[in-house]
Image 1 (cartoon, rainbow, N blue to C red):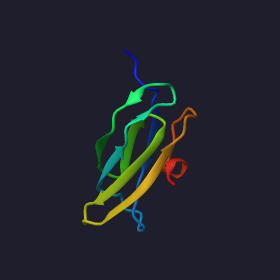
Image 2 (image 1 turned 135 degrees about the horizontal axis):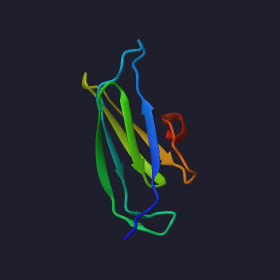
Image 3 (image 1 turned 135 degrees about the vertical axis):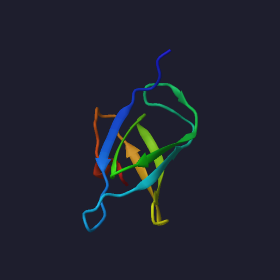
Image 4 (image 1 turned 30 degrees about the vertical axis):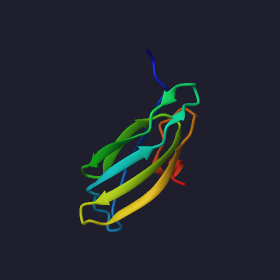
Length: 95
């Protein structure tokens, strides 16, 4: 059975000095109905950034993202993934 249509989000994170970020992203979402009518259970996906690069496919919707940097610093933000075809970069989904 098919699932909701997914959008690719890909980018590279760097530090202010240009060095690449080593971090973990925890992407979480609440239960919802996707724009194409699929029931989406709430959940979380963890992505490990090695050399700053990452890519993730998500259904259009709202996500809470927690960045956990190698040095222990943490940051939270909201992503809104559009229904338009991707791929998207961080500035296009950050709120």
